[in-house]
Picture 1 (cartoon, rainbow, N blue to C red):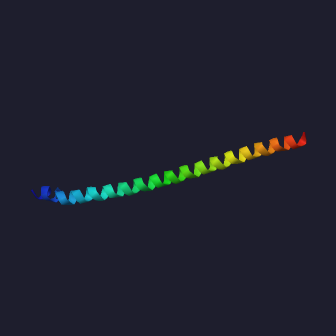
Picture 2: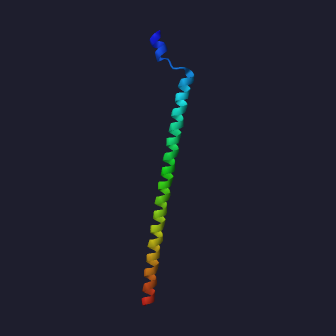
Picture 3: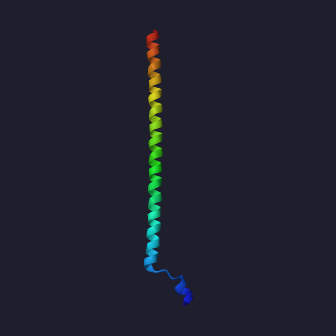
Length: 69
């Protein structure tokens, strides 16, 4: 009987443990979502800049060709 009492966790304590674990997991999830959003935003920004530079270079090259004719 002593061992059973020693191993017993009250329902309230068990619920508190689960609540704390859930809060920790939600915080981790929110942090990971923020990190993912930041990474995707950065990658999108980089691709946009690369596209703009490529188009600008193409335009400038065509403009030089036209001026040279």
